[in-house]
Image 1 (cartoon, rainbow, N blue to C red):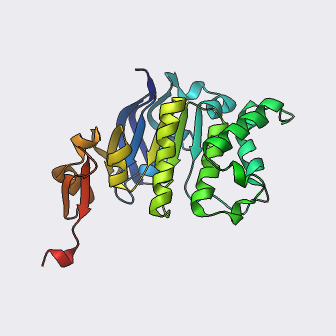
Image 2: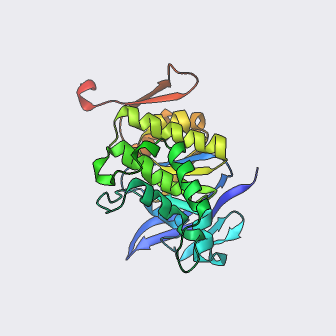
Length: 264
């Protein structure tokens, strides 16, 4: 299987504070790759570095076998779609208009949409099940619906790599499951490589093909869920008491945080 993303010895610092230190890993094409770690571990900085929003002074990023520096701006947008945290919802656009913006990397300098652009946008809305919301404004939607709209816009880019920063944060359990199932469908039906930052270890255990654990800007471990989601590794990463057993859904690790009240 080919490599979609290759990171070699990446380091990044804000002023004098080191955020990422000597990060190296790769992501295979078609994998669902999930980045985990406590707050302040560097997850978002790493994802923004892969997206090209940040340009670390040390290290190397390759996308689809090419050096980052070889991509023109439109080429990069045609290769990577990025859905960040805290997306704005006060746009004066309808859902259909917002999703169609995903076609921008393919427009000429005049920015005029073609018939094919509208067809691809409609397909993206159907795939994410937001087609019935096409005429509504974003601030009229629930959090789960808003997230699916932004994912539809990313799908509309037709990029082989999709990056998402905590897409299930602040969503209820049902919407978390729908978003994760949607990522699984993108991987299975469209062959898209999905790289996601998450705080939810149990969702990562159920869906991730490969996981990466970060702490203080360094890689603690990377590998299959059942290889790295163990008591020793997780306690080292999160510095808290927890239990690791098998999920009732199958041969999947299940993690339970143990609050102090149960340790007395």
